[in-house]
Amino acid sequence: MARQKVIILGAAGRDFHNFNTFFRDNPSYEVVAFTAEQIPGISNRVFPSQIAGKLYPRGIRIYAEEELPSLVKKFDADEVILAYSDLSHQEVMEKAARVLAAGADFKLMGIKHTLLQSKKPVIAICAVRTGAGKSPTTRKISLYLKQKGLRVGIIRHPMPYGNLKMQDVQRFKTLGDLDKQECTFEEREEYEPHIRNGFTVYAGVDYERILKLAEGESDIILWDGGNNDLPFIKADFHITIADARRAGHETTYYPGLTNFMIADVIMINKIRTAEPKDVELIKDNARKFNPRAKIVLADMKRTIADGFSGSKLHGKNVLAIEDGPTTTHGGMSFGAAALVARTYGSKLVDPRPYAVGSIKKVFEKFKHLSNVLPAMGYSDKQISELQETINRAKADFVLIGTPVDLRRILKINKPMLKVNYEVEEFGKPTLVDVLDGFLRSHKKVKPVLGKMGKKK
Image (cartoon, rainbow, N blue to C red):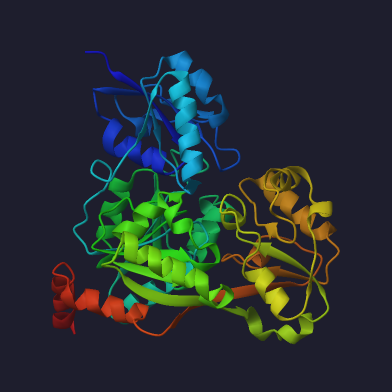
């Protein structure tokens, strides 16, 4: 029987995971191509044979997604599988229409064939949209579990945008590991805060091997999700974050609605900067789609690092640098830096007149951006262009609203201030309340806590 020919649409993450867990050694299918979208510069690579396995001695070519209709015809593809996240339901169906028009079937893969099983307890932190607040929530939970005496292994949703062979299984314990593995800004934004807090972060391409490595060094696993994607590992406790600044998106974005529906806890974030009616809309949607979930209310507490007085920003021209994915395909027109600037009466500088190279193209593509600069750094050239853009901007201060401290990386000709933000809950239950309940009740956790008690 002929193998079914498959094209996987991705963005260097879920696509590779779906391949590894279902297609790699499956003689019924032949993956003829990957496509790449959302992340600049990740197409025109080859998924290497060393990872692809014996059925793919030449590896698998990665194309730009814009070539999809011609690829379906070129390979006579039977199926096209969508395997990336943070897409509106409208966008998903538009992609489906293009695939169907080209003559192939369009599919989404569920969790049955893609979830890995862990021997250790797993807490997953996911979201309904990029930029909802997963990272600070994961940091708060990891520190809480550390205080309980647990060895916490943080497995991060993949971001293998470079040499895939080198990035197959990654372990980040020190800041030097970020340099050794040539991490992009997006990777640094996610890994650096955890490392500074004393945790080891695991990521890469082959999550079965990554999970085994983390299990050997941890008592409990935290899945630190990316975009609004589903976990790669079966969660014993699932926390989904909804964004009150984007109320309604919890029901209109893929696969965020699925995360919303399967959550044990829905944390509604950014409530102080949202309209009360928007918070109520998310609560109503939670009652409709997931009435069993507990609701936690929260916001981001923002501070300027190093004891800098925000009053010194009053009336000053400030360039706000924000998290790249949040402000590009995440659709947000501002972030933590812009909010701090506005709080202290600063004037936000429009970076567009100063943008060069690929940074200029970012603004051409994402037209909702005007008064913030996305921290784009997917290559040495783009980092150089970001640095030049910042240095050209006429600003008194630069506010860094990304989790990574760009002062370590960029050489800037004006004062740079780091904005920190952390989760602050309101009312009951809190994150600690729901986590305590999980630790007390779950069978998978009790043996771990019991062993720890004997050690003491």
